[in-house]
Image (cartoon, rainbow, N blue to C red; front, top):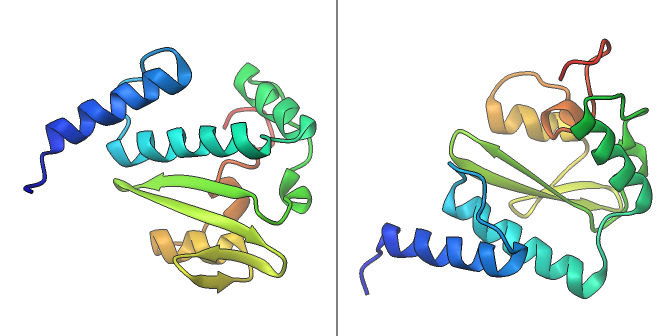
Amino acid sequence: MPHDPILDRRVALAKWEATFGSPPPPHLSVAFLRKAVVYAGQCKAHGGLSAASRRALRAVVKGTSAGAAPVASLRSGTQLVREWNGRTYQVQVIENGFELDGRTWASLSAIAKHITGATWSGPRFFGLTRRIGGKP
């Protein structure tokens, strides 16, 4: 069966609306829509973010300080998702580091450099920290 990107997008949009009860923000990729729906299902089945993580995210949305970076508090099994140049990267926190594409990494910064080819703060690349001074 030939691949139909328009049909794929329609299916992904319908699943998003069925899951979240509203249309998604514009311009999200089909891959991201699918991963968000899967993540929502995992949260429903196994529980979602910790209370501390939810508070930190609410603070970021309000534009206030989220406090210290929660990197040290990331629990094994946590999934980090980042879109970069049209590809969605999904990193899993494991006991001794991080896993991306079946490979183990010691730090998020190493993964960010692998993805972008440039030196990045890994926590910042994955949206876990903010710049000092308030603006992201």
